Figure (cartoon, helix red, strand yellow):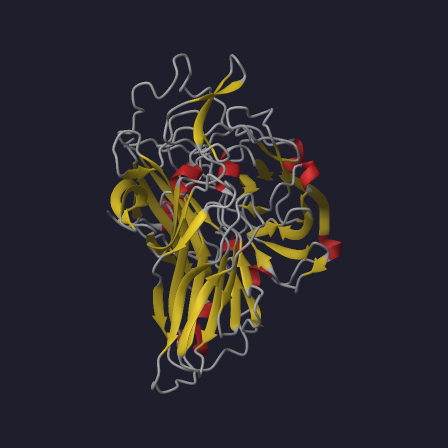
Amino acid sequence: MSSITRRDWLQMMAASGVTLVAGEAFGQRQPPAPFRQLEAKWITTTLNGRRVMLRSYNGQVPGPLLTARPGETLNIRLKNSLFAPRNAPARGAIPPGVSTKWNGDHNVPHHFEVTNLHTHGFDTIPHLFAPLGTSDPASSMIAIMPGESFDYAFPLPEDHPPGFYWYHPHHHGSTAVQAVTGMAGGIIIYGDIDEVPEIKAARDIPLVVNDIGLFPHETTPGLWLYNPTQNAIWQTFGGNVTIYDPATKKNVATRLKGGFTTGDYPLRYYLLNGQPFYEETHNANIPTEPLGAQLPYQKFTVAPGEVVRFRMLNACSDNFMPIMIEGHDVHLLAFDGVNFPALRTVPAPSGDCPAPQFSLAPSNRAEFLIKGSSTPGTYRIMELAQTEQFLASDAKVIAVIEIPRNTPSKNMNLPATLPTPGRYYPLIKPDEIKRKRTLVFNANFPGQKNPYVGLDFQINDRLYDEHVVPADDRVKLDTAEEWTLQVPDHDHGGTEGHPFHIHVDHFEVISVGGTQMPPGTIHDTIWVPKNTSVVIRMRFIGFKGKSVYHCHILPHEDTGMMQNFLIE
């Protein structure tokens, strides 16, 4: 296609209703590049010997790695080719009179073939609602139907932090089903940190970890996919599928093989860069403890003394990941795309019960350096076991680092300093705080407000309403606020931890459970453990419009644990 001029770009933004605020927030911009093409479509492949149908971007899982630089506009044309596959229930699987029609409640999972796009972690225009950048509280989410395409323009400020970001679907009601079947991909924004000599000399290895949740095809033996019948819910404790009947206000048993799940799956894989490294199956005896099996894992060969840069993304739908690398210090560069002013070094683990060197909530990214050990051997990159969630998560070997014998040492250096990410420095001072808020994440069982799902996943006792911005969820551009995020105890709906994520801007984590965090701990997502409070501070910079914050356990988000907010 022909190139787009700066005037074309400005006219396009104006036509979309996008408000570009303050020239100093952007600096002198370059004309945007042509549109990059992403196509959401089904693929059939094999995982650990099983035939599976996955959703993908451009036929890849994960999707293609995109790149950009501060000051550019990342243009993406998303084509939806998610035409529903044939997965009709077998005759007699659903009792007569039980409805499989969507009732219009947006917190009941629905429209699994409809999609849109979120560039996670980008400091850019609000882009979930139509038109892009809208400030209309009643606006609807962008909904791209099968056979349609949508053009996105993501302007990146000149001071946008360079780092690791990602993209995934975000249409309310279908996000979880699409993401947990393969629709996720990484984005690297290159910038000043990549020019630090010691970092520039290091190999750069992205590590995209995602989960794939699957059910048997309703009529084709040996084929696995996740494409639920409308209103069908997989019951983790029963290992069966039910449909809620509003007439009797009871769940009706079916002979369906698949349904929407807020818990486990009959079959789930964990993938690193598209290759499975761990398999889980449903445990009928202890349903909250899936049966796990380690699969073959990838190997990264590192010379003694060689410095390697890893960028790790937790793109899982709901798995909290405590990470440990055997025999190596971890030199943390950045979290969620925003680098620290200097390396944060976490010593190599020791003892029989080592602590994680860092943890990744769903959607978190960590960028770090390791320096190859002087001792030859094989060192595991581990996800440690955790019981922070409804489902227990076993220890898993994600990959290994091999230090070969009889290899000369490279003796590469680590950087002494890192560039200061100017967009978030100087840090917010207490006397700059204009307002304080508290958000409480809780779940009620059985669900009273959302009986079709059977659980009420709420923020401040509210389910999500797509077309409303609550009066207390309006914020002012260029002001700073302090938010307290709480997950209560078990008796008050705190059944598990929840990862809080907000769009448009990052935040500084001030404390977790009363423990002060090091200054400059900047995230776009933070894990809030059960029976714990987390305090964050953020400034709303550069962009007005309607956006969202939510739990990034995707089945929770899709069923109500999300709220709109408006930057004015």
